[in-house]
Image (cartoon, rainbow, N blue to C red; front, side):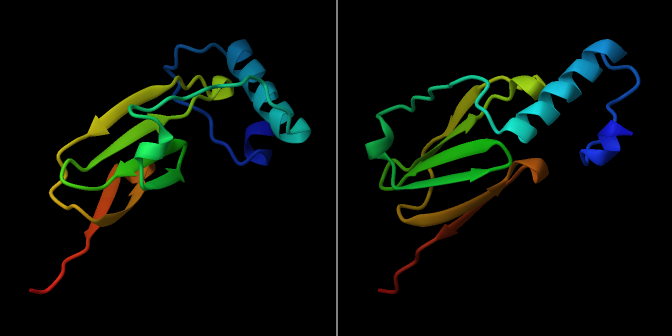
Length: 121
């Protein structure tokens, strides 16, 4: 009942989390939203520092930083969520074919969209 009220769904029956652990996780999740307090502080560093990137996008718990130019790249950081058991993960896509681009992402769909700026000659 509490899961439904929170807009959540029960996980798979073969989950490694037992019912008491899942109940505690739900209570932490609900308490976090009720109190809007910060449970922990996380610092995320990116290669070259934030000033080296031209665009930042955050969607679905993933933060992406894009660096445009001849060696274009997008650096991704999955943000941690202790109440959901999600740890930080970082990865980079390098050598993008476009020097000037916009990008959008949807991690839930495993989707990255690059829109290249093309100039006529």
